[in-house]
Length: 153
Image (cartoon, rainbow, N blue to C red):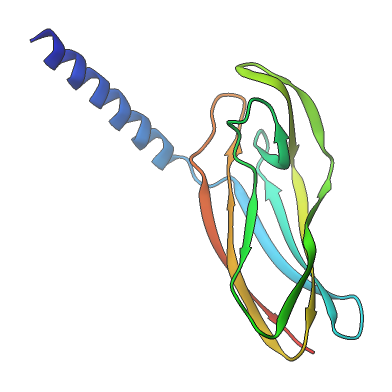
């Protein structure tokens, strides 16, 4: 009987925690833009604005290996060649954080992620980016967002 009550208690805690996450609106606003940088070259910019009190881990988050860094996946497109990897720019914060071993790297307020590409013809580039945002009390579950950007040549 004792184990039954413990199991029910654990399940109720997990169910309540899941409902709590569901009630928190996504504190991120993503916008996408394209900047022409050469004859057939472009820069795809993923601009993120975070609500006050929230942060996103750096692509090199540091810490104890448990932090989920933002990642970007581009769908295969024969008209697009990726040039290098995604770069991040913004005001990087590096510090110790309670509950995490080692220094962590993150951004708050705003951050831009940019991918250089070479395009052979007018096309649409699509894909997904995954990220996790946190505040000083909790982290929301990782989220996937699809994107699609028209690129003119």
